[in-house]
Image (cartoon, rainbow, N blue to C red; front, side):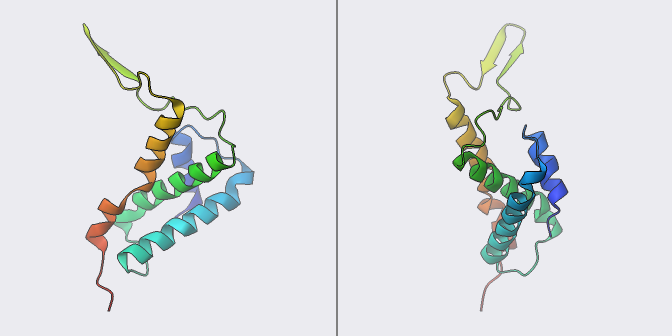
Length: 125
């Protein structure tokens, strides 16, 4: 089972500060992610190798719920790399990209983990 403290720590690394009010939502997202993985892979328990994948999926689900309830208006996507400069060369990753597009990309990267789950699928008889 996924530990809610690990999800809270991952959310913190993504720039979201978890409050006591978030506990039920986090637990729901954990259960949802565990259920999805077990059903997708036709397994009863999540293997250790998929633990971080499950944590990311829980975080993606949680942030998506919070965003749909308009509770992330002040959420800062500053944790993402905006640009890199080496000598005379500068590369910008967020030029002209809105906050909404960046947020959707973050959710997609956290939630869409089917490619990592495929190796753990079992045939269902």
